[in-house]
Image (cartoon, rainbow, N blue to C red):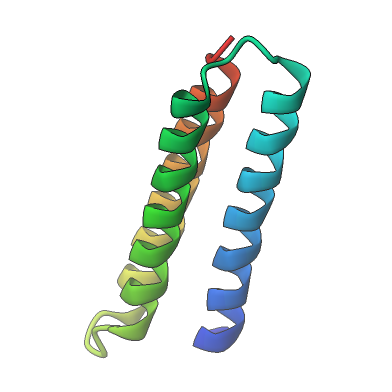
Length: 89
């Protein structure tokens, strides 16, 4: 099992990359309303806070299940945000 510190860094990196992708997409498509970009950015930050806080409170009785669920949830959330970004224009 990886250290929680490294997992938190990985979650932060994923969210940072999503924000960069959002910014780049907004720069390429100037017709997107700034409010839409801001809403997606806020959802990325809320996702980041959620996953980092979940990593701080691991249930010691179901460690493997916890991390598998965390991985699955992160994948789903990331894919949903990517879909929202590319359906802005």
